[in-house]
Amino acid sequence: MKEIKKIQRLLITSILSLILLGACSSQTTTPATSNVDSTIDTDGDGMPDSVESTYGTNIHTVDTDGDGINDKEDSNPVYTDNLIIESSTTALPVKVDDVRVEDNTGADHLEMTLTNTSNQDLSNFDIYYTITDKVDSTQEAYYQVLTGLSIGANQTVTLHFDNDVLKSNHFYQNMNGLYGTSANGLTFDINLHSKNYQSLNFSVDKADGTAEVAD
Image (cartoon, rainbow, N blue to C red):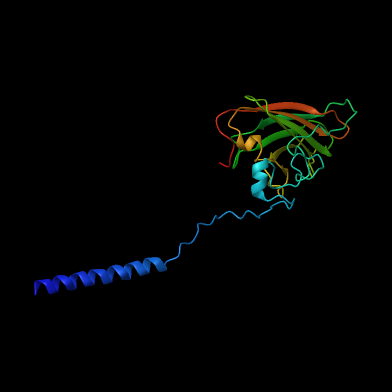
């Protein structure tokens, strides 16, 4: 009798094992998929955002350095020569009240507060600035026409370079470049220009420690 019960237990165990084995073999493993859509091209320049991140170009504009060449065709899309053209030697009547590249309100970015010290409105602005890595001397250079910028007589305005270009006095800045990726100290050398005035030159440093990201 004991032998029969022992055999029965062995048979039940074997049957259960076969059932479990069959259930496991019927399951399929779904490969892990990435949540990142590698086809997204925010600025429509023919380079997906993921590729722009690799190349260090701005996903918000087709021409990161402002030299008139599409990033996809540009051999050096984060560096341009100074494209400001001006023969006048008249000093630009603008006072730089504040300029900073970190610790800004909202998200860190290049920001400057300017006052028109004259009795006439100023317009037709463009800007050229270089960013130099203090450790390895890597350099980027950008030119932008500051479309829509006008500073009234004796008026103070603040410019934000943060890609939020639908807002007044907000312009492009490449966060895939040195400013957004390097933890080294950086120097911004800035040439601010208005038509018929000599460029105003000034600089600002970013301390080392971390790359600048949204606060």
